[in-house]
Image (cartoon, rainbow, N blue to C red; front, side, top):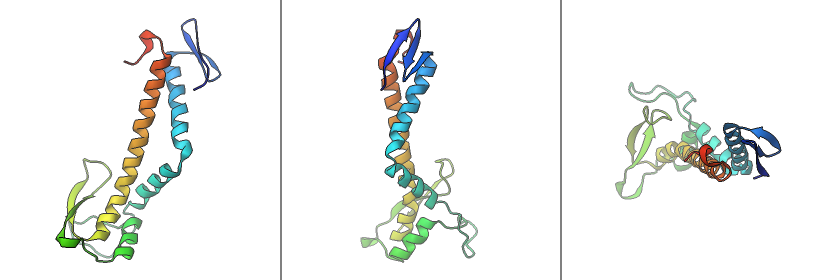
Length: 154
């Protein structure tokens, strides 16, 4: 954090003067966002994982109730693992049908390749959700340390 001062009911933060409480919150949010994504390797990996999970590659004909297309993650997993199955006939859950919980459905699979190919974008979403949570927590923490009594969020 940069220098923080208060003048006549307004705030001075990061070289900017006469900031209202909402402008101060926005400045802290921007600073924490830049700090979180400044490291970048995990965030870049999360974006690649999400993008590689999109089923935008056309495939041969599929049955009526199947999801159209395939993804780069699925193609890579199938190239690496082929039709290898989990030991002892274990079935593990995967998610199909979209990136929102409202459109996704759970499917149990016994092959390693579809499990890996469908799980890669889920890990990307988890990493980005973690980033959003950390940014929100740090922003609220820093803002509440600086803000006066009536301006605090809770």
